[in-house]
Length: 209
Image (tube, rainbow, N blue to C red):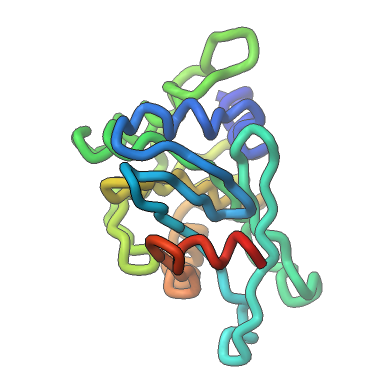
């Protein structure tokens, strides 16, 4: 259990972005940056970007900086650190949308998303126990499902959401926080997420800036 929490808390260091998306035969990834990606779907380009507004600064349009790495992990770093002192850490990675959409979308299905990713040594950690019932969420109008896991005083909320072309898992972690408290904070945070979608030349413009 401790190994599972520790690895997930590091945003699952060996998540494979390309492998996950390649399972969708209708779309193939062209490029990914931050919490966004550009795909080729048939003869059309499709752009998807997930953003997170800064707390207390949302009215001014300030967004958290989204970064990513070669494994497909993305994370949202705080623009003004003092304003995020009591906020959970947010990160995630893209997953195969078809697998999630055809699943039972329950606690087991969320944990299977983790289990199906590549892990060090080829062996995934034990499936953790849920510390709250699965609950419905909405991220930028995209429906998803979430579950809590805890170890000691630390808690994590895992969210999986997908549409026909894109799927992702969000990992929201906070130390010294009970699962019930973190769940409430996550529900308050979710309206700050926004999703931008575009197709064709309009979808390409964002990637040419």
